[in-house]
Image (cartoon, rainbow, N blue to C red; front, side, top):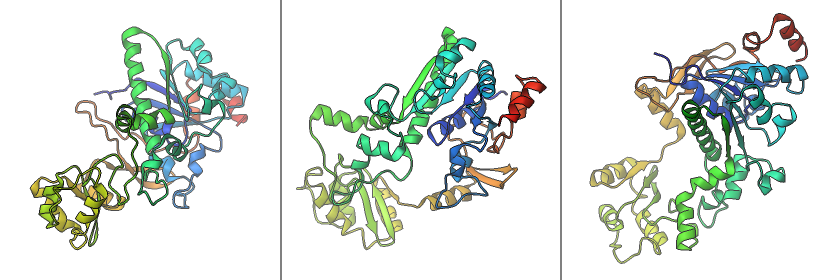
Length: 388
């Protein structure tokens, strides 16, 4: 059976995380994603993780570029620009995450592509949007900077600590999901209404949207919160919500009646304490009775009583368990340069048109001749290769 997005072709000018993760989701679901790179390779290929590369490639790049074909071209070359415009005419979707205006200056902007492909779905992912003050100032759009400017980082950690950003590129990843969702919506609109359109997302808007609950409380209740002194999990929630120290690690406790948790732990009666205004005192009191128990003992005590709780594990522990369970979230693929690679599989499970790992993350320009050979004759292809 054909894949869900079989027959959809995507011209992918993206780099870093926002764009590549979005287009990999489309590729996993069957789209033919053609990744355009510089002759020396996408910038992220050289981004070290923990100070290292994997035989010359970044773990970041390998994580987000499977099921794609790579074409390496010098975008400043007029021959390359002409070839890419011709290639765009064969595509359903174009995705880019340059700073606003870059592709316009190369003759590959929305209006340029629309002339050769009127129903193109032209998608842009930026840091700050296209016409905002910060965009016009030329500010770099990067996950940590967006967390800082949107308020996300200021909500992490305790009151005594510096603002603490999320432990992963949460804004990049969330914006990638927003972008792929927008692309799918535009594809449905084109099928039903016969129209192409622009799809635009930006990191800052996504970061604000991620805080919709908190901002709703802020603007409608007109009450600003402060971070907890003892690490209550989120600064706008009441105790016992948070991370608690155990004898051998930590345990997370979510929303639960304070009195019931105190009773189970053998803590003093806390019924006279307000879970919100006294949250730090409540958490500190409860934690005095979690520190001398192992994490497993706490889970065995709390979970049967209906208390939402979980042991805090490292990423390695979580991945090791997935391996032990034979989870389809851990997949392997043979790579021409790196040998066998382990990757995180697609988290979307479709019963009738499941995702498929068709091929490994490409080497730089691995498919240049194959892809451009579809639109150029031998003479044109040879001339273009000479300009790289």
